[in-house]
Length: 127
Image 1 (tube, rainbow, N blue to C red):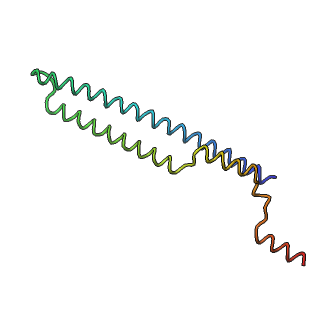
Image 2: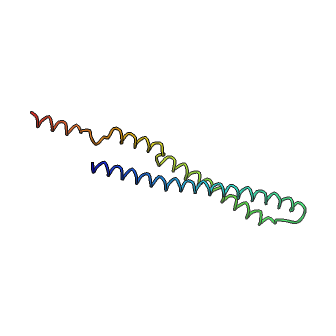
């Protein structure tokens, strides 16, 4: 029985870790959305500045270059976030998988089964 409570504690610790990871993933997704919105805003600003430049007042070449560099940095950050999300989804078990493992452990209780070496030892003792 003490071993079972240890397993239950391990499962609870895993569930807590998964909750923290889930929150971090939500935070990453939220930041990705914000970065996407910022890109849209910058694109609109560039479009409006381009129109004013065509009207002989607006951005100079250096300002356009700076905005383009900022956009490239934002795109790199988004790619990095997407890559991080892929790693999270591949590296950690999903909630459904953990629920399935918990169901198996609760119903089958592998601690009640004997190992092959234990069975051989019992057979030798009974002879």
